[in-house]
Image 1: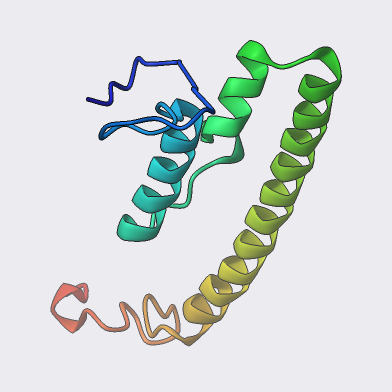
Image 2: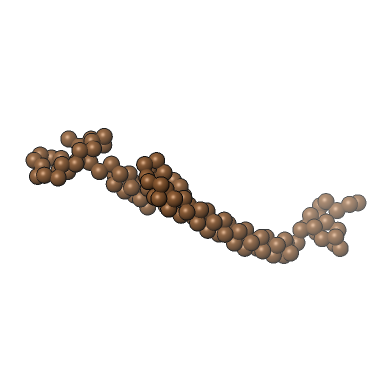
Length: 117
């Protein structure tokens, strides 16, 4: 029987159903990937198993590498958000210009029932 808590990795020829133990880290990596693919989830870099595992158990150099990658990912995300805001801002301005809305020259514009007496 294979248990997720099993850490034994016997590299000799095993006899029986369980061969080689249970790779818990590989299981979690594959679970992250399968969930993201199945549900179309865009997982943040800091939410990945590799990042969390390295921050908890990694060496100083490994942590520094992942922190740099996280900073780069955050900067790229901020740039992408700014680009989206700029493009949607331009679209909103165009929509405001095109909408009949409140027109001072014609009184109340698209709301004729609200015209003053």
